[in-house]
Image (cartoon, rainbow over all chains, first blue to last red):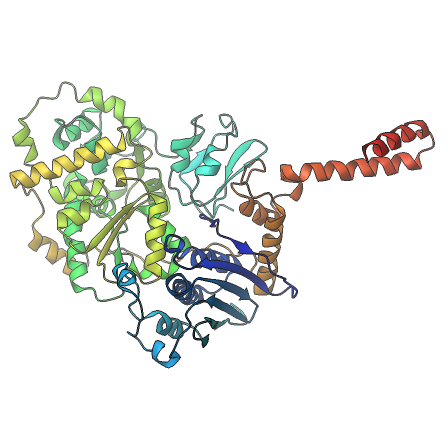
Length: 160
Length: 455
């Protein structure tokens, strides 16, 4: 039921292995009005593929938080979804301020959000911890002043 | 194929393939094949948008025809409170119910009273509930189906209190069979419905085996006869008639009505399917955890906006709102006794009789590896399409068309933009044929000339 296809830029990327589905979504920093649309598209794709609903819900929350991080803090970024029969993976890469202290950022309640973001209901310091809570594997790489990249993995059961 | 009952049917005689429904359908459940619209059963959630938009009235709600309810020995009609908003402001529920009886039915039951009871029951449930929030109202069957199909993760948040129409029907059958000495099967209960989807919740309830209601009649079908039946009914004074209206129940006709009359401060009311989708997306992401209760309707403004109503939905919304304001001002509380409701609540009187289960859409393939391949193929096909969603292929969008091709339900050549390509291929084939033919040597040389000139 793909009811609301987003008109957001989707980049074609090389799909060499035929058992891998991938799609790359572009995210613009500060683009609050489109925030969440990639996560909605991703959820629809996962439903069409027939991923277990309990994994879809965890993946949607993680992709949403990851998407929001780019919208809130970075200039631009990409979110790449790939699905294989064994796992579901999100790769986030952004050009932004990066994270000074990853260990601190992973703590619930820690946030560098501005007043405006908090007024909108964001920046409760739950972003990264929430991804960690929902994902099976989560890695953060960051270079302050340059950008951040996130690796988020979910393992799928062999059979349904 | 007929796993799901639907309350909508397309009349191929009347359908002109104008594609208005194709574009309007919020779940992309319509395709136009050979110039006629058809419904993909699995995807349809019976919202009725297509009925409203069809210029040829070719989409027919499968409600019961008015006047055919005589197969029962005793027939009772329960109108949706939305009926009360269909007439002028001075016509109050009391008169409308009398009008229904005048039409030859044995009895008319005011559902607003049961709605009031259920409002109290919801309040009770909200007070003792401590699971994930918010709880979601189950009054709109389209919303319940939407959650089953698209938001299975939210299914446990759908309030397990049965709908007033079901509870009332159960109660009426029980009481009437005693007082009239009839078997429950001899009592027919018909719901006067503002929308077609209630018909499915009767024929195929989302959570239990069988509904207590025997059928549904469209408000739009009974409207004309009812209007004339009410003409010579003696008027009671406005003040007098007001006193019988349950303020808690009347609110059920419009979006926000339950929350307002219960004075639920920490609640949210949303109407219109696309708006509901946005709210549910956020809910699924955990963004509404601090809200207690969500009232959601697929029709704009709630039940008064149903596709089988007559009055303009904003006017009827306003009528209900004014009625609530008047009742609030006059401090009229013709409502159920809350102590009585609490007693029944403790006896589990209000709870649904089964369990609501998810009903996710079938994936592209049962096998995960194949499904991944097919989803990839869908993306590749989509890339090759013009992406202008013209609808000429019979699918609402290029992406939906790509899916149809992957599923084998459409051919790539159904896309009108593939035609020039097809012509080129065909002409090449023709030329090859001509090359092989000795008889057509002269023709061949002519064609070669034209082709060369073009180059």
